[in-house]
Amino acid sequence: MILLVEDDVVTRYAFARLLRVAGHEVVEAADGNEALTLLDRHPIELVVTDLQMPALDGFSLISRVRNRWPTMPIILISGYLSQGAGEVILGESGWDAQFFQKPVTPSALVAAIKNLLPSSTAH
Image 1 (tube, rainbow, N blue to C red):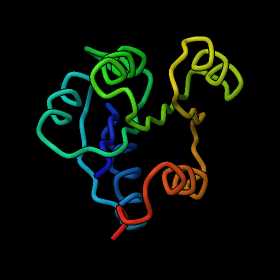
Image 2 (image 1 turned 30 degrees about the horizontal axis):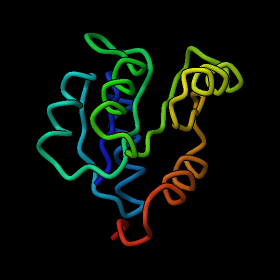
Image 3 (image 1 turned 45 degrees about the horizontal axis):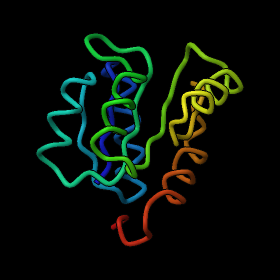
Image 4 (image 1 turned 90 degrees about the vertical axis):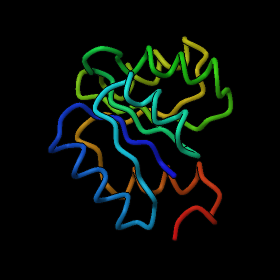
């Protein structure tokens, strides 16, 4: 199951639809606080999160996920950072996460998820 965290409802709908069409089960959160609640309630296997969100941003969410679920695969998406800047920030933070700059190429996102999840998770 994939946890998709995105505050923009249109973007969240588009990403969720893309992932469901690719065969994944998806739960959706509008911010990091909601995401943490869903992580406690569902058997999440991967987190896809936006960077800029109200209440709890993507970096704060990644930090909390890493503290509780150190091996959880994470993909961070942002329209505010370039691809290079996002990768440098994640690398310097020591967080093991992949970065995608918006707009995200759908095939690249689906391929990254396929590489991060066991093949049995897509239906």
